[in-house]
Amino acid sequence: MKFFLDTANLDELRTGVSWGIVDGVTTNPTLIAKEGKPFEEHIREICDIVDGDISAEVVETESGPMIRQGRELAKIHKNVVVKCPLTREGIKATSALSGDGIRVNVTLCFSAAQAIIAAKAGAYIVSPFVGRLDDIGFTGMDLIRSITQIYRNYGYATQVLAASLRSPTHVIDSALAGSHIGTMPFKVLDMLFNHPLTDKGLEQFMKDWHKTFQEEPAAR
Ligand code: G3P
Image: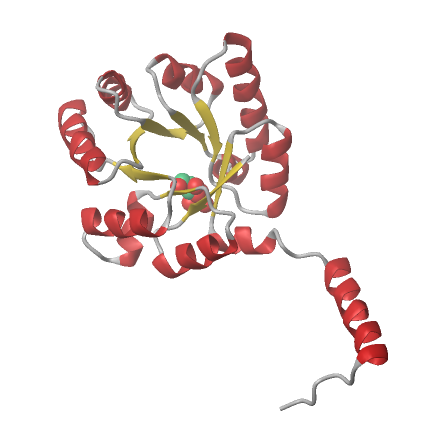
């Protein structure tokens, strides 16, 4: 499973990269706006930090301008994946951009039917939003299970990117469901490390070692 960071914050990206476990980045207009820097310049900086797929979302609603913006975004760096919304216009843009050989991440996917449409349009990635479905009383993970099953049935090449992941459980369940990619906020990636038995075990190992071989370093 690939781990993507769902953030446009450069410090968070640098930390994730230093751990060696970040395979790519997803951004959306909200995340980009939060950082307050010019869009294309910001995407370029992200590409300099993370060597992997970097999703940059179009901020247009009609297919013509989406296609034009998508082509410009794709020129920023070879790793840029253009993100289009799962609307009729977005799918029209996806078909056109995919036809040009530009990789598209179809976002705002909330049903299996929408995911089939994205695959048929030639999407490189589809992004079903788990947490936002949970928010309105559905089980978001059921959608990931349905899409991975359907894509397997037909051998669709589109990768399933479980998005809107809010907890380590979401990440584990997406992996169990066979999601190709999980994108998560930095906080969730950080939480994946945690286990009290790891901390307890390490503390004991250090204590036993120092008892026999040397004194524990004096506190400064
Ligand atoms: O980038 C799309 C998605 O991951 C957003 O997550 O938590 O805002 O629903 P969230």
